[in-house]
Length: 227
Ligand SMILES: [Zn+2]
Ligand SMILES: [Zn+2]
Image: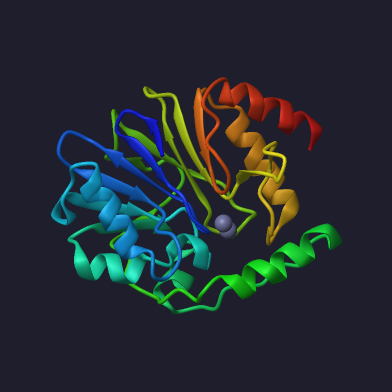
C-alpha cells in the first residue's frame, strides 16, 4: 500500500514501512520471522534492489517488529539502528519482559504471543538516543518514546511532516487512534504519547492499523487529552 509517493506500508501481522530516498531505501521495522522475502519482493516491485536497502530502523524489540531483521541483514548490506535501551533484547543479551496489562488487553496479548514466531537475535550497527539525527528524507529525528518497551522509538521527519510512531500508537479494531497496547509501563507510555502529540505532523504511520493520512497531529492531541 502506497502511503505517499516513495513511502509504502508492507502489511502483515507486524506491519513495516519502506521509504525511498534518491537511490536508497530505508525500512522501518521488519515484520515477523519469515517476512524477509516478502519485504525484499516488495522492494523489487517498487523498483529497488536489495543492495539499495541502506538502513533498517527498529522501533522496538518486539518479535512482530524485528522478525525479519536477522535474515534481512544476511541478504542486504543494510545498517541497523535501534534505541540503546532495546538493543540488549535485539542482540540477544536480554530476555523480553512480558508486561502486566489491563484485563481487557490480556486475551489479545496471549493471542499475539501465540501467533508471533520468536525473532532471532541479530546485530545492531548504530545505537540511537533521543534527539539523534537520522539520514532519512530531508532529515529525521529519533524520538525516545519509552513505556511500550524501555527503548521504543518514534521517527519524526519535520519537513515532510511525517511521523513513524511504532507501537506508541495504533488503531483499534474500529480504526480509532489509540495508545498502543501491551505496555511495560503504561503511565510512561501515556507520557510518550503526549510527547508525540506536541509535534507537528500531517501523516502518522502507527504500529498497527492503517496510517493516519491527514491532520494526524491534531488527532494525536485529541486522543492525548483523553488519556
Ligand atoms: Zn510492540
Ligand atoms: Zn506491535
